[in-house]
Image 1 (spheres, rainbow, N blue to C red):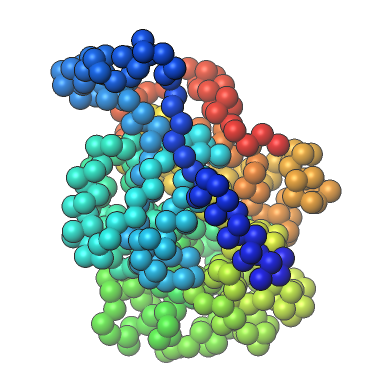
Image 2 (image 1 turned 90 degrees about the horizontal axis):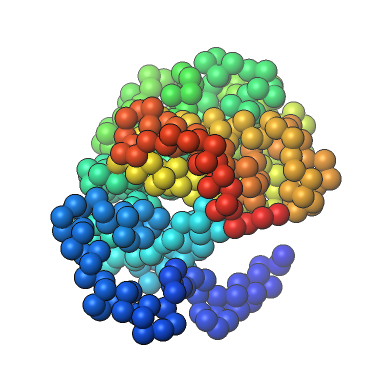
Length: 424
């Protein structure tokens, strides 16, 4: 779709009455004085009294256990940067829509006018009793690290999706791509271009998957032992090497992860990589190298981007709805590494299973099978809801962060299937 046509249609989509993309609807009967007397005064006092006696009954009598706060200060929104809370609201509403259609989770989007991380943390802490979980969104680094770390203390699931969502999906794509090119994860050389919140989180999860040789670059070059004034997060990826530039460090590398800016990866750099290179060019909307340019340069490439108009879209919607679904269903007190890795492996496994015929047709691909152009599932795959949510719930219980134990897994699977709104 041409840029001007997309702009026109997108603006009409958002402005058509009622403006925006989400609304609140009642979940109980309300159309008589009797029901209103239950919903509000005088009947509403009764659940309040029960919650006073036992705070955990807030989950029984309110929507807390199915309500997530999508919260931002608008300091790092998409490729737009620091656009502020008001301009970020369409994105937060979009996130709310994805939570609902993919995982049947209700959302309040909150755009907070506060850049000071300490003040932002206090604001979010003060409103956290409302929610069963909090999805932090579009907050710039390094503040994002501090904010997420401190908010994990509030005893409900908290996740900064820009960091962990990208890490989980790209991690799933990575292990599948390596299987296709028959390379062992512990032997590969990986270059990550970008050193923001998403890049750091990706690097951390790749290490957990077994990657031993990671070279990270920021806007000033390779993070090596000669660099000074690096943040503690960047120091995690500081290596001993004389190379200082991307074009030097990428030679003979097996994997390039782009979380930076468009068109920074040249044809010369791509040619200098090892056989069967894996390229995740995730800058949006313009990848680190143009899709068709990359394919023309190397026929043996496996390529993924953040765009929906090309194969292998690294889309956070493949994981965040289901991570929160599983976490909420067992009343998890946090989202830990075990839960993230469980989601990652569940997503990777789905891509290797036979694809439902309807999903292939929806994707305009007649024969969608595991291979170079299909290393991760499509966002509308209904198996994500069941498989990923289930894996996360089990990991939460096994790792000891679940306050609720699921005894009947067959019944839970049926509940997950009943929540699927996006039937194909």
